Image (cartoon, rainbow, N blue to C red):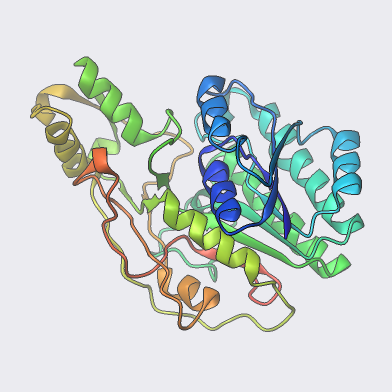
Length: 340
């Protein structure tokens, strides 16, 4: 099967591309290698893919409409995994135009490429940030998600609505997956676990937002990639959405206890009250994030066992999974199971 993976030099994209190659698929990886964080890390991820049979890389910006149209026409992809995006909540406050170019215009170009070139199934990444000010826990695809708290989240919610309309208007099978904070090896250096570790190793204080009252589901990158690949194989078809499901098993951790354990594992122990400084809750950042996991596992398969890991800071250097009970990251599916 010939698959386009956008964001192939990214944290999740490179992992998904590797899994597809492992099972014998032909993968065309696309990325613009921008400088949001050090491009050397992106190049290092690509270096693990480029020697492999069946992989080709194209450096291209999603916002290049002509270039994207030409790529889709020339390659005739069977399926598409769209993971490329301008990420980061804080950066969206500084440079919102980058989010319009990549997340809105770029996703439109992907949708158009799929629409006009017979793509069998599009799977794209959304985010738990779309739930914004929602206070009902755990989050569910049955919730409206109409009040995002960041421009980044607003662009991702717009992606969901765009995908829904393309599915409805053009009968394009589309599946959207709302990822809950992904962690693991080769991760983004702007994410909390890397920032915590970097500051601990350098003897610098850690910023603890909202007095450490955050609660957040974390998902191991290998489990996310497995969920993406299995979703890609299950082509969305029109039909009624599933009923409300009870939340699945979750492993949550308050930020402060998690930090304490990280400090110990990184060579501490460092006293939290002395080595972490508290910062008021960030604007545009939700206080809690929790996934309703059971429905997502049911969508993928009634019999398959899809693994989950939320918060595995107990052994961070080894990247151990905390649980193997069910894959978490609420799936919003346009097709057989519609999102809110």
